Length: 200
Image 1: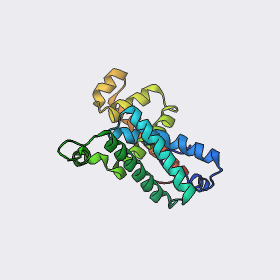
Image 2: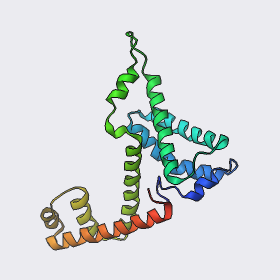
Image 3: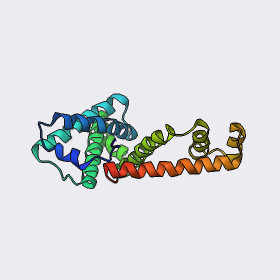
Image 4: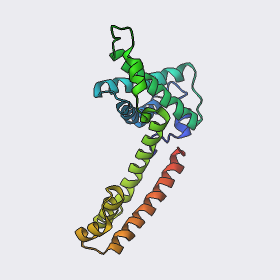
């Protein structure tokens, strides 16, 4: 399974054919949740984020129909991130009426946007998050609950190994060994997923 946004080159190539409905369905299924989350991180409310998502997907389809963008994966992802960011900013501007003084609210808003709104940074963070979640879900299915809990509580939740060991009724050594084993498996699955879908 490809993990967003590690889009396979073959899918991007299939998008060149406007008649390839299945390719566009695959693309929408892969990117719709990511674009929505991206829009929400940039400050849009639920309905506006849905609107932005639909606009981005439409813009991508229109671009491919007229003149496909550079389909090299890294450039494609950067281009898509920029399309998403521009779409979101247009929606923000539309919702912010100009003040009586003649200054645009959007100018103030843009100046106050946090650094995390940077499209490339947000896109990369989202990619890493999705990659981890996919790998963790695969590994979790192949772990005992105590091994997974030892990993999750110490590595994800940041709890101390001695407390987790006491709660699970195991030694601290078992907690450290479990954490190490799960991390090793997750790294392996991440590498496999990246090989399947292309490196971010």
